[in-house]
Length: 267
Image (tube, rainbow, N blue to C red; front, side, top):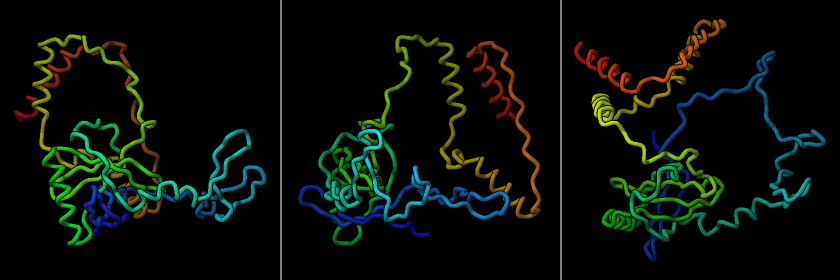
């Protein structure tokens, strides 16, 4: 199935411009979605905005955004006013600076998108920009209106294309809650065993490593209900593990892990 293009515009670097399109690099189309029903009638339950005082439904035409400046006092903003703020970056990805590749910490990365040229004329300009970033080992920083907000975006060359990442806002990233003591010494014997265990557990990457077991079990449950149309018995709750109150010795745990791994491989 072809990916659905959800944004079209222009990639610009100085005077070089290319017609481009964006498609999300990830999808949730395979994720289960449920409707909320009335248990008695089996009819779907609707969600709607209601006035907090009159409790009457508010039609779309009367819904407006308001910024609170005091109790029951708001600054009213129309959708047109909000859209005008980011007009310049609505249809143009104008790269205004570059930073060394890998210099931005992973926590700033938000959502990935595939950026591709839209026509043969723009393909040459697109490729020149991509190859220039590769040659200098840098990524581009720009701004773009996506998901109803202007966002900082990062453009990273990947193979024959460019991946565009939306970046988190500065006030969305927190400082680490716990400081690690970098003066703490690591026991050399412990480290040797840990390195051995890590090496033995290392394998080639596969998407099966990140499958969602809950989704798989839910789909299986739904199929069973569809076949029987009978109410399934409630799932048994796992027996809680009782804490012994003892701190596990890391060295012993590693030795046991290595012994178990060796026994598994010798079968």
